[in-house]
Image (cartoon, rainbow, N blue to C red; front, side):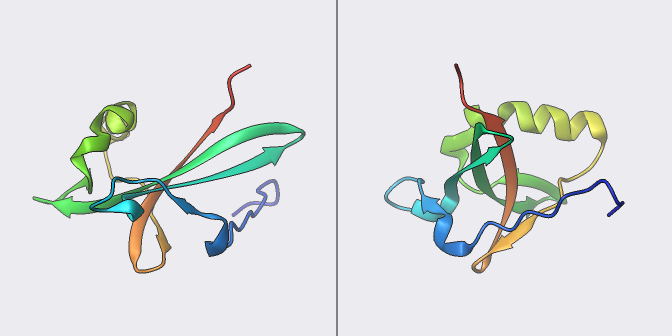
Length: 97
């Protein structure tokens, strides 16, 4: 991490399960503000399948679609974060106006 990087820690209690009833922790949601702007913070549970990183709950494939395209373009898996006992990819997007 270089001197211009800012470290942000989202506490486990801030994450709200938003997956489906059979796997509510497949996607977690939180919100944050950066310089007064609100952002959605989404955590998608991922796993390895045949050596590739895939979303754990295929019902979120549409939301994950753009991320998969970025991953394929950059040539490798995303860095994951452990939340509880699961591995997640964190996605941060601004609220719409």
